[in-house]
Image 1 (cartoon, rainbow, N blue to C red):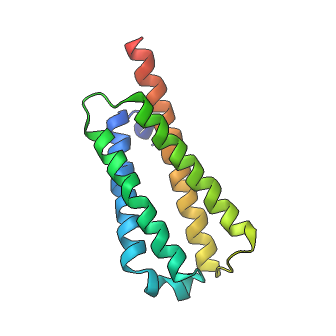
Image 2: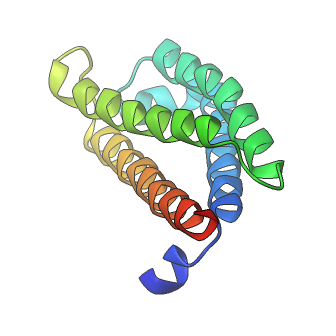
Amino acid sequence: MLRTITSLSLRQILLLDAIATGITAVLLVAAAELLSGPLGLPEILLREAGLILVPFVALVGWTASRQIPAIGAVRTIISGNVLWVVASLLLLVSGYVAPTLAGYVLVAAQAIVVGFFAELQLIALRRTRAITA
């Protein structure tokens, strides 16, 4: 299974990231009020997180649509994903919020998925650069 996933092209991985992040953004913006209580996370935090993702989704989608994704854009996307993971983990340990168990699980799970995307993108970028070198 992991071999199949790591054999995806950089563009395919970017497209999957854009789709997953886009779905997350829509859910966070549209359902922030509904999710706030069960997750124990402030509605404004959920909504703002979703809005922050919108330009990121545009960048990832645009980069995925290029025949040859720009290395600088891919590095920016990887960095953004890593920053999102760090921010998610800091949120959980900061004491700024008091999430429920479901909130902890959701924040941790999405951080793991985003970190996985960053790793896949880095692997694919290195593979792409090795092929073109």
